Length: 247
Image 1 (tube, rainbow, N blue to C red):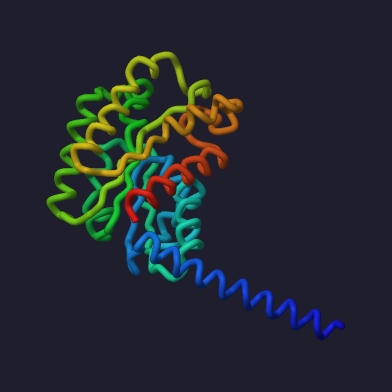
Image 2: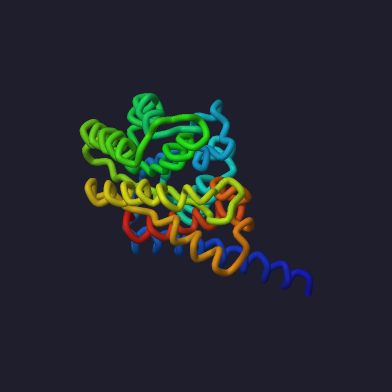
């Protein structure tokens, strides 16, 4: 009896393993996944999420940080083990667009990614309120356009993903000022996505829908930096649009 049970378990395990391989082969065929794809995440602290700057190689837990990049990358790697994804996180806390431009050569172009996902904008407005930065939505758009233009010149075949900067309304760091000025930054990001034929990730809609069903602090304590639940929501939003529109 024990021997038959052992055979059943072994055979079941082999069947599951075979099914998993077949699933991933079918997935690769369905979405026409390239066998090698280098994906780079860029942005500010929301992308950074405490990543280790010493872990510069791709596909490392410490290098991903603890935010949405970790969760999105983990799902891509787990669901597509036969696809040679090389995924990097080069987010840096406190960054505005101008900070990205300052480190773009080493942290972006040197990697030669096939896909660049960028989330930037919250500091371009937040630092205006808190640090005396003299930025405007027009300045944000102009600097962002220059960065994207330069990127396409250096990497003409790169696929761009522009993530919408967002806020979670009701968070402790969000005042009424955000309602009047911050939407212009979001509009600029959406405008640039169309201008550069980039995939646009609508994070604001995802969070707006989420707080209709639950308290805002489930998704972020301060309205800017996502909680683990908020990071999961971001990752799922990113993955959904990535799979549908990039692969």
